[in-house]
Structure formats: C-alpha cells, structure tokens
Image (cartoon, rainbow, N blue to C red; front, side):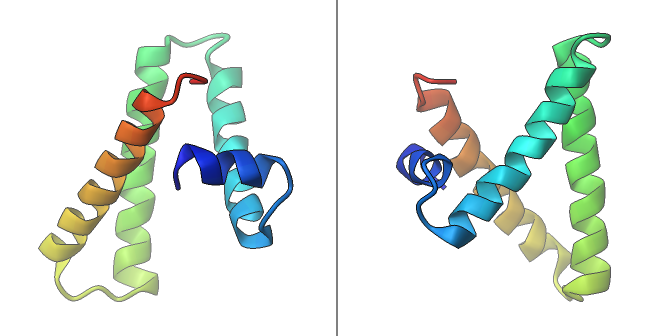
Length: 92
C-alpha cells in the first residue's frame, strides 16, 4: 500500500483499504503506547519478531504453504517494498 492509498483510506475512501489501514494503525498505537516504557529500538525488534512468528503460523496452519523458502522470499519482498514506501513518506 503506497502513501496515496493510505491517505485515501484515512479519508474514508475504499472500504477494504480503510479496514486494512485501521487494523495497521491499531498495531502502531500498541507500539506508541509501549514506547512510553520501552525504547523504540526494542519495540521495533519485538514487532519484527512477532510478525515473523505470526506469519509463520498463518503460512503453516492457515495457508498451508508447501514451499517455505518461496513464502519467505515473497514476505521479505513485501516488507522491503512497504519499508521503502514509508521511508520515502515525508509524513512519517
């Protein structure tokens, strides 16, 4: 999701995108709340660990992914694209 899609979602346009951004924002609020008592560097690594753990569970038990390495490559590419988009966003 790029910054234009995110802006539209926050503006209430596009119901599926809007739900996605609201869900992501809930995770960000958890991180911001935790940041009151924990260093941001600890939180970002905890989020990476938690995301990896949850995505492994979903891949194995919900999606029943047969090729784990292909899934890892796909997820790493998706994360890389999202991270680059957010780093380029002047509002972050």
